[in-house]
Image 1 (cartoon, rainbow, N blue to C red):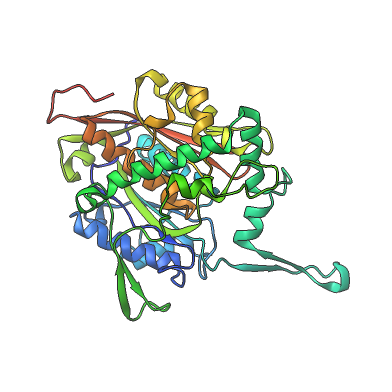
Image 2: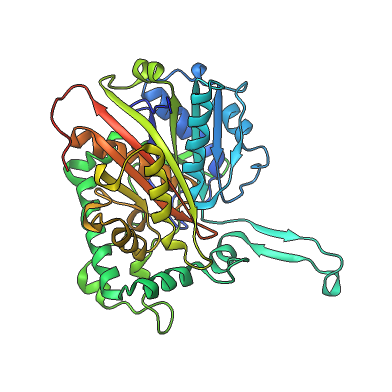
Length: 406
């Protein structure tokens, strides 16, 4: 595609728990602050940016102005671009848009800013003078949309149960995967969080008007300690079902960002020019209504086809896995063992702010491939509306001649 992510020119905030440290902070000025500081710390000149793309799923006050507001706050108020909202697929859609712009020559350095806050989501009132008594309709943006798909007519939880039934996945299997994912996350915390410090940016915590700093968020907040004994005590959320609170992710707040550019510019600005990160392809899919956790598989196969690769060529996989059944179904469909996926953690452990979730996983995928000595990586995940979105990357490390680890 001739689209590259400069090694090291990306970041993610820690993810904060629901109603935690970031609950009262507007996600857009917060993401602008974190992004500007992260790029400065990496020595990247914002003057090079000629396109920016904002991803956000949960509206914030002022988000009507979207991307232009964010770039203005970052000091690049002549940079324009779109605002993207595609639920959990927002990051990959924005990455594809940036890659296409660079490949077509309509942009040379595209900035991605993904920001969301699940906490304190908006309450939207839709006037309707023809309604009963002339009253309109009120929507609690976050819980109402998690609780009801207007097309499939089911809550998100039901999609997990539908796929568990289709694949014959038990509660015990889901808990085994969750415990393994928690163990993998501990590797990211080893040696004083050495893995996470390769990409993670501190967040200044302030009052709601961003006037007075009251602290700093430097590590994920709200990670649930997970043990086999604790999981065994949990009952399915739905009577007669299989999915417990332990077998799914939790809502969170946070942001992430990256630069997409040409090979030449990527080499020039990378924190290590010996490492190249090439975007190879994308894939999207939609499955039958009510079976959202199945969608990552066909999306992954579509992305691999565009990249000219097979699953056998893939060295590492990261997923957005709001349910444990996601990864079990993906493993059965692809033959890639779920135990090998999501080294260093995934959204089922560190939470799900929506828009930045996928980009954080992609950043971790890049860093894992670097530690392996290079190779091909696949990210795939599901999104609202029974859809899936995937991308394939290749990391090449010219500093080593070793074969990437399987």
